[in-house]
Length: 201
Ligand code: GRF
Image (cartoon, rainbow, N blue to C red; front, side, top):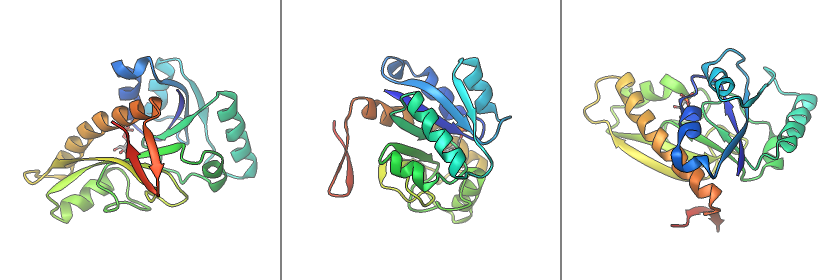
């Protein structure tokens, strides 16, 4: 399966995908797209000699069509948002229906939505004195963090003393969950039945 990964930051999820032993034979990262030309994730993509496209600050019809053409040109079957901060334009969602997924560092539908990214999420989780957090992989629709949930994994944070400690526990979980979900996509084992997502064992 050929995928594109959209990134805006440090790229640890991208790196995990690229280095995952089981994924190597099944998934090819053909393209990395970013709205942040200087982010660490772009450097990782370059190290791995993956084609990179820098996206505009604001999408307009022309840039969306250009992106769609690029995705077609690279035969992209699945788009993975791994720390990508921009809202995905509707035209892209329409063209890649149920083929765009995102990883979120909390248990949705809590602690999601506009502005809920990076440490903002973990600070909110910490301030609410939440005992369990985790990671969610979900389909992307036109609203932030609102698409159907594909998979979730939780982690006990009852003893965590800071948002940073929560972030690091959650990141560890993300690095397990995202490759596992990608493996299931590659094996065509993710199905939507009656509006619910099922992962076939
Ligand atoms: C992750 O916590 C992911 O859940 C969120 O943004 C962060 C990206 O981290 N959407 P990285 O760039 O993959 O290290």
